Amino acid sequence: MSRLVLPLALLLAGPAVAQSVVPVRPIPARAVLGPDDLAVAEAAHAGALRDPAEAVGLEARVALYPGRPIRPEDLAPPALVERNARITLVWRSGPLVITAEGRALGRAAAGEEVRVMNLASRTTVTARMGADGAAHVQP
Image (tube, rainbow, N blue to C red; front, side, top):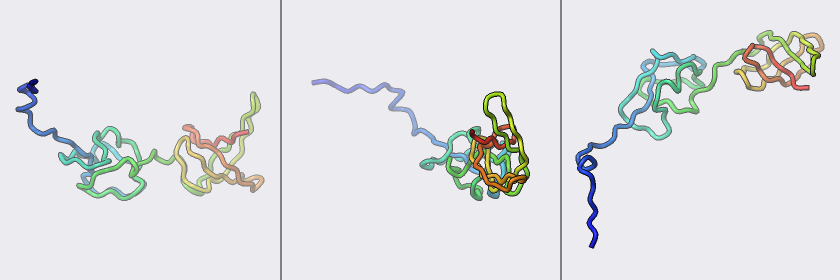
């Protein structure tokens, strides 16, 4: 007959405390979160962020309320361009670079696709926003 022996530390250990990230004040949608906007609650919520560093610098996709846990789907990268903003369209093919002025037809963050109207030709193209704030059209 075998005996199951547990280390004394496991028997004496208390329950593990889980944490969730919560806002400290109401945060409207489209606001960029800073470290002063967040706190850690000692309650575990399924799917909630556990570390405030994961949320700092991101934009709220929905309104966030104090004490309610923040989920990853509540946040997104901050938009670089707003709807109707004038931006530069860039088309590259090898050494050839063509630029034009355009108007964004939606909001977009770096790396996201956005529809842009070329102001000279009035045609609409789909471009990918670059970190430089320009919309890059794929050849």
